Length: 243
Image 1 (cartoon, rainbow, N blue to C red):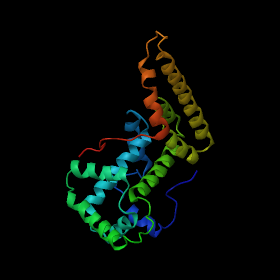
Image 2 (tube, helix red, strand yellow):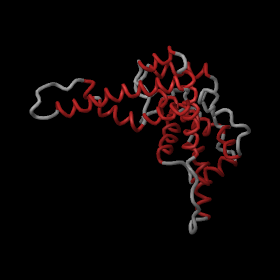
Image 3 (tube, rainbow, N blue to C red):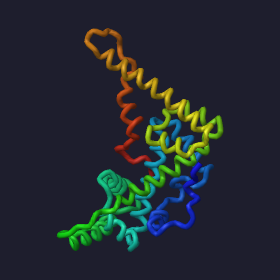
Image 4 (cartoon, rainbow, N blue to C red):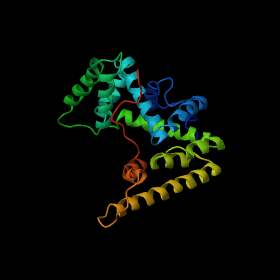
């Protein structure tokens, strides 16, 4: 099982990202992870999607509250041309909704981004990856490792089985981190869910034909929405973390 924490000394590229990790973000202890996991298993959709999203929100808040004057972060933002459209929306949401952060922090970062791009506008360099996308990938790997470890306990396997389960992207990440016993469980569990989803998708289509008088059940009606998040992962149109 690959432990994402056993990497030796962080590289220069990793260092600035690690300084932005919120104290509870990504749950560097398994006890803290299971505390948050238990909560997310009781909510709708993929629990890892929710954990990662909350970690991203903490990252943005910490960035805007503590690090908008950091020269290294300014350089990384400039090299990336800012953040991607998805994470630009998240930064806007956090800035407009959370306490102790102001638009001036975003303005300070993007002053550097704008100035640097103007300096190379005739011959722009290839942009690096979005800084927040890189952080998200690290958080996903970390959470997948902890989940794979936690599922060695049959009680947690039962808890996952009674939840909405994992999206396919996070199923794959967790499967890659799991031992043989947990892998067997994950495969069997995900196959069960997908067979049920396949049945409901077919029934939804069949019952929506004009010549079929049977009513569509609530579970069948929800199947197409589940298919979207199950295979693509969850996206959120509001902040999950409250002040």
